[in-house]
Amino acid sequence: MNIGKDWDEEYINNLKKFDDNIKETTVQLNYEFITEHYFEMYEVALNAGTIMPYRFNTIGVAYRGHDHDRPTKFNNFDPEVKERLENTYKRRTELQFKYADPNSDQKARYEEFLDKEVYDFIEEFPQFKDIIITDE
Image (cartoon, rainbow, N blue to C red; front, side, top):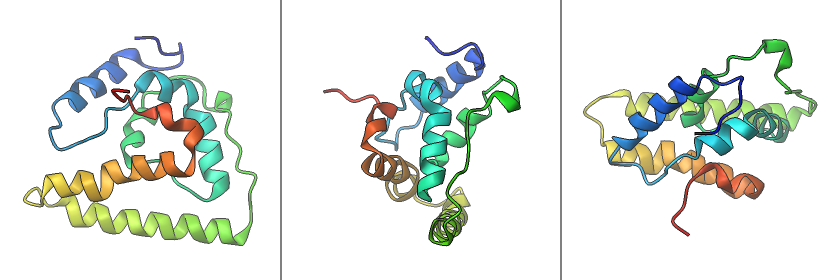
């Protein structure tokens, strides 16, 4: 695997192994691409009023560089962007609670929440379509 020096490669490899055991997902994350472009994606999304897909949360934990080296800047203080972010976080929280029950439909959890966020992110930011590995 080829990830940058500021990323915990062992942690990322464990995420890949974990993903390999998720039968319900239709998304195979491209961790090399994501770690290479993580902060660029974060900044673009945040300034557009979008949040990163939930499945990326654990990837951010693998960053081992210095916090002040993180190249992210929130430049858009437009009230509509702020409102969009707040509404998106509210919706995510609702979905998290809905699927927190271990007896909930795990296939639906991925189709309606976890994978859907990844696909929605790609739809909004097609320049980052390589966040998933496709068979094409």
